[in-house]
Length: 415
Image 1 (cartoon, rainbow, N blue to C red):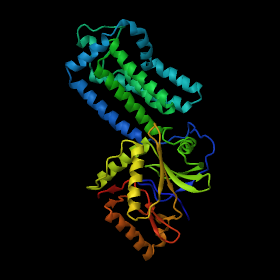
Image 2 (image 1 turned 90 degrees about the vertical axis):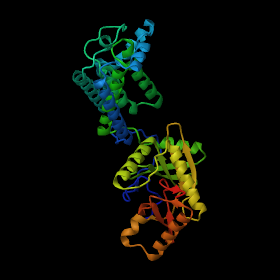
Image 3 (image 1 turned 180 degrees about the vertical axis):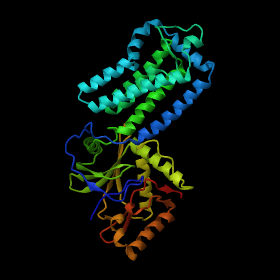
């Protein structure tokens, strides 16, 4: 079987790489098509740690810390003129907000989204109520003097139920919204928390604990049911490549266990076939989790910390490939890296007319091929380059039986 692909850097399975239908028209993932997002794993861990820390502080803190007290007073003593505006936004964290957003989702014919909003909002609300009774932290009026009370607030303080509900609903809703709408959504969540300080209902620790609780609940739910975020819009990718000067006619997505990237086959207007892959923030999170697993499983693995942006990751791979090529190693020439403001990078390379070593290793590898492969590795080592992910899936065998090395995402120079 002939292939023109490389494997994904973060441990892609060596088999099951087949092309799907060509994409000619805009493709929007329907609501039912979701996938687990590695970002949500990290969010769950961070939110759980943060909520644990805030809860511990709420339990052991008999007195209000001066920093927390001063921060509360700055917000609580703002002019009364902003109260109507703050009150309106603050309702986004109320129990009624759960009913409203679920109803809107159902009216928009998004039943799964409505279900997720209902579950996240109710769970966050319920946990906040239970936590209040267990932690027993009073509201600001019982802990501080001269608190400006706007409205009647009964019950206990930690965590803020309004902040928890608002954060949970926003976490679940955000993946379904455009980038600008997501920003305003999170601004609203911040205003809900600040509003609770303004009306004298909560202290800053209560609000932060509520935010973290809602973030934890929402992220955990998305981790369970999946998220629509993560699958690249191939029509948009094609448009970006064309804008960058690459005349792409069609794009085919390859189905694979691609935890480090989304592999693509590009057919150019000239008829030439090229290979590409899309790197996103989700891929970077998968890379981080994969490297953490490697560190746990092996001693002194010395994996590099994942790059801050997908563009940096793509450019690193280009650089190491070029250094390998300058050293005489057979590698696929990279022709372009295209990045955008949404932390997505598309890496394009000339395809290799050959077969993956993983597809022929079961039939036996000739001494000539093995010798040629080791000679390529020797050239890498002479240039002080370590591939660091040299598996059969990352070796292509050309039409004349020669070995080509691909996927330098894990590679290091000065090795």
